[in-house]
Image 1 (cartoon, rainbow, N blue to C red):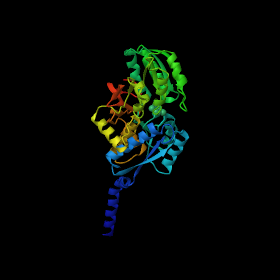
Image 2: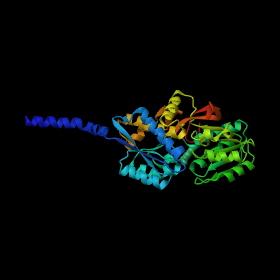
Image 3: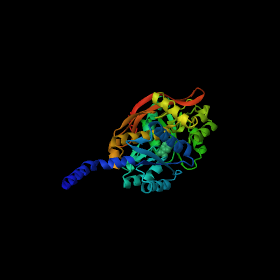
Image 4: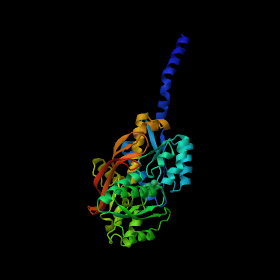
Length: 391
Ligand code: PHB
């Protein structure tokens, strides 16, 4: 009898044991360490926007996935790479964050990549846009954009629409250099001529002398890349120096016409043509809901392209956790993320299984006044543009 009871207990243990890890996992909250510039010059258009987008996703979809309660642990790196790195280490080691997200600027993503690799922690880039970022760790995935992807379409469009000569002005670091290289190549291949190129420091930029040089070159178009948050400052110089009055068209990837600042830029930007993956004016049911709910949650503030990158960062996390039964174990997470596709407020997007980078539609847009406010109004769509800009 005793032997029989012993056998039954052993049998129960053998049958139930494989289920135990899942059951106990489900009881633990899942901490997502979100590292963003929440202070300094990139706080408003990048840090806050990404975080508010991520928070909205959780509010809309509930904070429990596969039985695990999702906790966002927000940390401010103030845009300083050494700080991002220290915070990431603390999040993984002390707070037991199982996923890292955010990364507002390229150097901040670079700084954290080795930690993701060492800890085998999924790292979701929800902002930074330099093409090579996912190569820095096999645990990186991206839900934002790349500069080659956002730039190639305007490089094709401009020379075909009468803008045969251009001057380029970019911020002098990863994404700016990607934007400049892509534009130079694609624009020339399509018959355009480059009259000059300047690169401006990321820290404390003074746009005035560079804008003056651009004006003196007398191009038909001025191609601009500046990171989110800097658009208004460079446009102010263009207006003050009479570039717009001189008939020089401003073109570029959409960062310079950031929805966070656009309405304050005023008449000088009317007619500006950019190519980009997100506009608050994107006409789709998903985006109408997104903008309405974002504004409701945030005192009427308009969402920009960074917010939707944060929103979709959470969409990626939720979809993967649903497939892995709540496990964020690095290799399992990655294999379940590769190839995912979904409908975002931006339109269709997917995670390329080879590069772990984002594939998405890019739109050509013109700044227009709609109901008294400035918006990037989309008038053409290029489907499924690859991270490296091919389509
Ligand atoms: C980046 O640092 O990678 C970055 C930041 C803001 C942008 C684009 C790229 O608008």
